[in-house]
Each structure stands twice: as C-alpha cells, then as structure tokens.
View: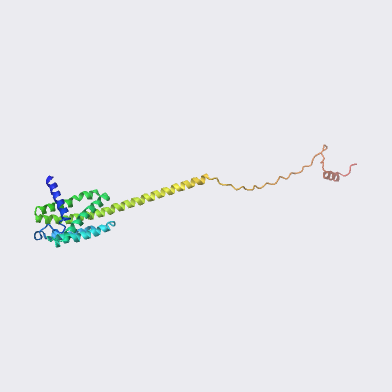
Length: 242
C-alpha cells in the first residue's frame, strides 16, 4: 500500500508539472512509444457521444474534442514538444471530474465505484512510464482508452433512464394531486350548495267553491209545509174545503 501511495503522489505531481511548467513536454520517447494501440485507440472517446443521453449535449461535444486531442497527443505528436500535450492533459482532467460529478448527481454510485477500473489502469500505465517499461505502457495506455469511454457511455445511458423515470413519477404525482384537488373542490362546492337555503315561491291556492245548501221545507205541527207554494199545491189537489 505504501508503494502504491508513493507512486500515486508521484503521478499526481507529474500531472501538475505537465499542466503548468511542462505544458509542451511529451515525457515519452517517440521511437519506443509510437504505436497504433496506444495512439489510435483514442478514437474510442467518441463512443459516449453516441449514447441515448439527451441532456449531455455539451458533454458529447467535449468527448469528440477529447478523441481528437488524444490521437494528436498520443500518436501524431508523441515524443515531440507541442502545446497539444498540455491541452490534452487539461481536457482529460476536466472530463474526468465532470463525469464523476454526473454520476454523483444522478446517484449512479455503482458506476462511480466502477471508475476505479479505468483510473487504476491509467495509474498503472503512468507507473510503467516512470519505470521506463515502454511496452507495458503501450499495452496499459491503450486499455485506458478503451475502458474509460465504455464506462462513460454506460453511465450516460443510465443517467437518461434515471431522468426519464423521475420525470414520469413527477407527472404521475402531479396528476394525482390535481385529481385530489378537483375532488376536494367539488365536495366543498356541493357542501356550500346544501347549506344555502332555497327560496320557495309562494303558490296561490285555489279556493274551493262553497257548498250549495239545499233548502228543505219546514213542516208545521199538522204535517203541512210552511211555504205558500206547498199550500197552493195541496189546495188544487184536494179542492176547497166544505
């Protein structure tokens, strides 16, 4: 562990030197390190640009740029002092921290932990360069170019999946809250209607006609009717009294 810790510190200091004082320096012999595997595999950095991620549009452009810079620094200008080496170091460092930030933001902790694999390969390649093991550096640096873009491509796709699932959950919760609010509003309106008294319009009652009273003739003591018409009728029937 102490050996790896000291080597990690040495690699970190070398990186800081290459990004400041040794901005143009290559730190590699051209005759021993010029190889298609360590140089042309830089084209793999365009792989994340073809992911299904719709949010990282600027990030996809950066990976196109990183692929071009990697080919120029590790193949075209390898072993030759050129500013492209410093630009490549800055671009690779910024992209590394940016991808880790994307993983933490999307809570893709498994992908972040798996970044130990390509970063470990890159660290071993830098140690091989310090030990002047050029063939080992060519082998490891090529695998760094292959493993890192594949992991980034995977992370970008999963980030889009996480974003889409969160969006669908928000839409579902929004619809549920909207429907519950509408139900509450309808209940409150129905309660308000039931509480307000309704004015009844007075209806005119039709008066029923008074019953017609039938006049019954009054009888006298002898059983005759008291009305004069009745007396006349009896006289005509019986005739005059003798």
